[in-house]
Image (cartoon, rainbow, N blue to C red; front, side, top):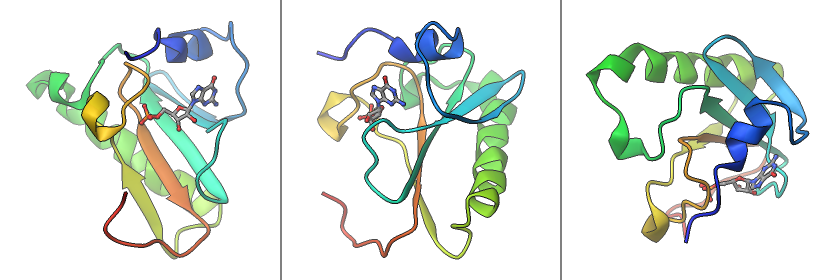
Length: 114
Ligand code: 5GP
């Protein structure tokens, strides 16, 4: 079972997080259990529970999240190589029902992912 949407509480600042970037559309914060030296989660403020809930009206929002990822990769010093991950639904490892891009960097990555 996916947990409650605790990312909404992070957006609302009722749960603290180490925030890396914020604007009207999105929030980026450092993952509490980092899987790489740099591990930031980039989330829309709009509630979208899973990747496959995205619709045509979200196209520019999704593009915005990616541009924020590029900006953060540069700012956090991982622009030489980083990985973006979206886990869609529990079988893929999604544990929080609020769309999030994982931005991972700072170490060599392997393929295939686990
Ligand atoms: P998912 O498994 O859904 O793709 O990713 C959820 C991510 O959220 C995990 O990497 C997990 O470590 C992170 N996470 C879960 N709870 C918290 C929290 O309270 N604060 C922060 N900063 N990250 C969290």
